[in-house]
Image (cartoon, rainbow, N blue to C red; front, side, top):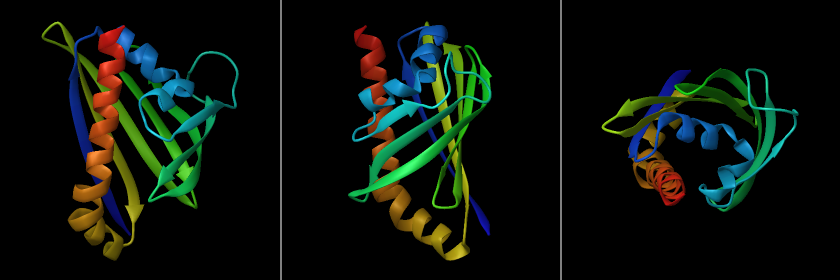
Length: 147
């Protein structure tokens, strides 16, 4: 297996606490990530151990994920594992104050067979995953900056 890692980032004109609070409300992820619906499994605020279920579209197909929060350090870091079809997708999000706003860095990583890694690096990442993730981050930014 090979570890596939993709990094994304964006500047948001909002304070880190506001960015974190909106991001940590997983049930609102569908507001900025098209075709995504997330429901809480756990009750209460998002913290380590909180669980969610999501259904989203990938290549026009519904994909269900079980989500578990593994780090929750308000207002600087949120990490979770989204599991689908036997694959664990680790998402690590770091927030830092920058120029009167917040710099958001998102790292997605998962284990893939070497052939899939090559295909992802050459085709899926640049033409599908990257543009989709960047669009979601732009939508996230717009939602926060309009409030």
